[in-house]
Image 1 (tube, one colour):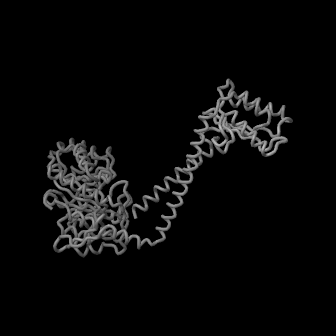
Image 2 (image 1 turned 60 degrees about the vertical axis):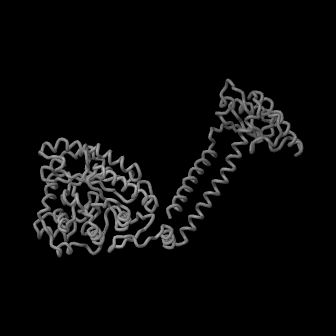
Image 3 (image 1 turned 90 degrees about the vertical axis):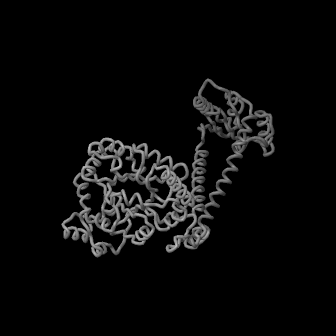
Amino acid sequence: MGYVSDKMPLLGFGTFQIKSSDIYDCLDVALQTGYRFIDTAQCYGNEKAIGDALQLLLPKYKLERSDIFITTKVAPKFQGKNKCRKSVLKSLEKLQTDYIDLVLIHWPGTANLSSNNIKNSKNRKESWEELEECYYEKKVRSIGVSNYNIVHLEELLSYCKVKPEVNQCEYHPYFYTDDLVSYCKKNDIHFQAYSSFGSASNKHVLMEDEQIKEFAKLKNKTISQVLLAWSLSQGISVLPRSKCSSHIIENFESTNLKLTDSEIKSLIKKNQQKFCWDPSKIIKLMLRIISRNLNKVHCKRHFSDILKEKKNEKGDNESQKLIYGISVTSAFLITHGVFYLRRRNENKKTDSLVDTISFQDFLNKYLLEGKVSSIIYQVPFSIADVYLEEKLQNSKLSQKDQFKTNLMLKFTNKKQEVIARPPDIRVKFEEDSKSFKEIIKEVNENMKQTNESLNKEVKLSINEFPSRGEFFISILTSAAIAICGQVLQKIRNI
């Protein structure tokens, strides 16, 4: 373990969920009490506050930088090539120090990647390689990991040039991971405990445990001191945090309590419970089983084998659901896309063909003569879709078709086939002095006066763009695309 075994105290001061505004006061009490180990992380958001505080507090207590052991952790969002190194350099800047005693990879997974994404393994390796570079450059004195299970450590030990010195994980009587602790000890990796009181939040479950309460009363110690001593007595370092001065001092005094092996075992709960994040769901691209005797790779399972096992575990039902979901979504997108583009292209084609007409001419020559059924007017484009009368007075079908054709030719000078559907005619109006709403009002008045000459009353309506139909279709399309993306992501992550 080297640097860690020589320099790192077993009792550290944790800063998780301590705001930057509270850091100075907390560290002031901690350093005065005797803490010489400060644990932080990039995602805690208080590195700069710690750096600022130490600039004032170290001289206050006549301490040198070398008297303090500082740990920080690479955030999951900074995992991978180039990102990891840059984040370490940024931490150095915020902490205002030339070196960091220990830098850990905070989590075996990468932010914004699903737990079983194969890129997690690649990013872990690239992050470790960049930490090794920082180690060789003496920007960090030791490197390690956090929340790594045995399977992650096996992978890391198979390619690392610099061995990890620390593995920081959840550990307490409710979550006794003896196999992981033993594996770390066997490979000279110091095991460090967080959430010693049973939770990463402020709800410390173990503090309410009746057996632990009785044991603390028997030892004439506080519950927190017993829980910390439970790990310390196993040679496992702890990182209690508190903003209360009395609790900071109380936690530090836990080093005075030593538990026997039988006492340690007596506090272990039969019904184990994990309170924090579960790294066991983070799988690897290549699962390497390492010989514990020879410390060499002797068996390798390819990721495709793991996929087959996972598929067998899940069964065919989920696969059928995924296939059905993506089929329906794709069919909807393709069908809607074809009709949507066709309508758009036809409308654009027709817009370029139609002649401009005065609305008053259209009103007098066509509307008042009863040749139009209805008009839907699109305001931004000054365009109207004109629907002709289904039945013309004293006219046969052939006459109606001829009338429609003649009317289209008059407006467009083109044949009927090129006109957009479903509207029979599209008309582009000149700019009028009156607003279209005023014209509609005027038309309606005229309709009342001349209604006896009309076969059917003309209906006028304003169609704000986009129309309700187009807006609804756009929403459906967006939803379909989102669903399709989720389905593809699930298939990708199987």
